[in-house]
Amino acid sequence: MAREIHSLVRKYGIDHDLRSPGGGDSPFSIYPRRLRYTFACRLAAQGAPPKLIAELLDHSDLQNVTVYVETAGKLVGRLSAALDAQMRPIVDMFMGRIIKSDSDAVPNDPRAQIPGRSFEGRQLGGIGVCGSGSLCRLMPPLTCYVCEHFQPKQSAPHGQMLEAAHHLRRVYAAKENANNAGLELVDKVIAHIQGVIEASSRLENVGGIP
Image (cartoon, rainbow, N blue to C red; front, side, top):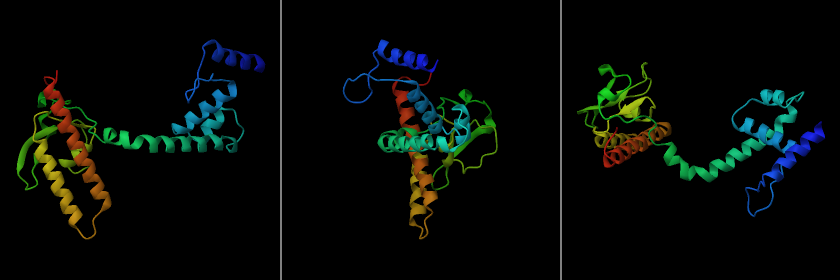
């Protein structure tokens, strides 16, 4: 039975003319052990615990799955190094949903509206709506921009909120014992506000939100 399965897997690669994903145009040979190795490495890369991997591979102990966990770690590290510069600005952009008016928000609740403030403390009016429905543990309104539950309004004073964020960063940076974690958070807020401004501008250029 094992030989038959091995032959069928190899035949599949030949019949479908599979090619190596690397350089050149060489045939891509597949066989059961290779599929088993790929299966285990993907499980490890997705965060599956060694015990689960061992059970799925029918290993009697965890020692035999170490190679899969180590290989997955190296692959993730190489991918991160290669893609981080290109993907980081995209990942760091705002993750929520831009709305045209408060009535488009989910939930449509006036109590969930978030007022903006300038760096002088002046009220700027509503900048969006919170859709979490729970007590916020962040520091609104600036940190709302890094929250996936925040639904910013397309036409809102996001530019002035960006100025407030830059002002806050200058204040933090001027302190003798500047908190690196605080600066990183403000930098993230700045990136997300810029993302909202850019996304709102694109929506405006294509005729707004349907």
